[in-house]
Amino acid sequence: MLKRIQRFAASLWQRVILRSDPESTKYLPLDNDNSEPHAELRCPESSGPIMAEEKLALGLYSPEVFDPQTGKVTVAAIKIDTLIEKNGHVDICGESTGISVARIEKPEGAEELQRTLIQIMENRKSNNKQGKIEGHATITVKELLEIEEGAFQILDDGCNGYTTHAVIRAAEKMGRAAMRGPRNRLLEHLNKTVVRV
Image (tube, rainbow, N blue to C red):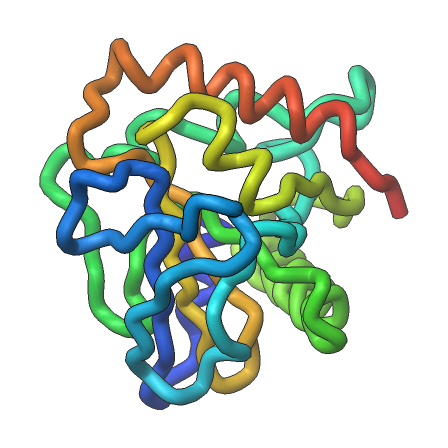
């Protein structure tokens, strides 16, 4: 649901794709020192290339993506089906599939994430669904790519109104079984960094 809400902008967007798999030709790898990515720039509304030390924030709301009783991010927040998209990822400006995150090291990142969470709650309310904004959990680009070499991709999917939007997805070669371990380790990391509101 979060990824659908974040696709609300209708203008051209810029995307930068990072991948930890150096064999890829479509997704470009980070430099060896992990300080700066190679970048393929497209769609001019993005806040710019994603850097290795940059923090990505997953917006948390209950009950789907956060359990307020346990204080943990739910498995439903990082679905393997969302990471993999068995029929192939949508890779069109503003329609990119994957796990939606905000680049909160950018000045506007936290504000844009908060606005998106408020919009999600408004949409839920109009559909007679309960929910509450709970906060966010973070991971740096470098930490994500080091969970398992070649497991994840990060796609900068910024747009007008949400310039810091990005998506996390499984690398093209990853299958469901192979993705379970990296997904679980990503959840473990996110659960260590939860910030409640």
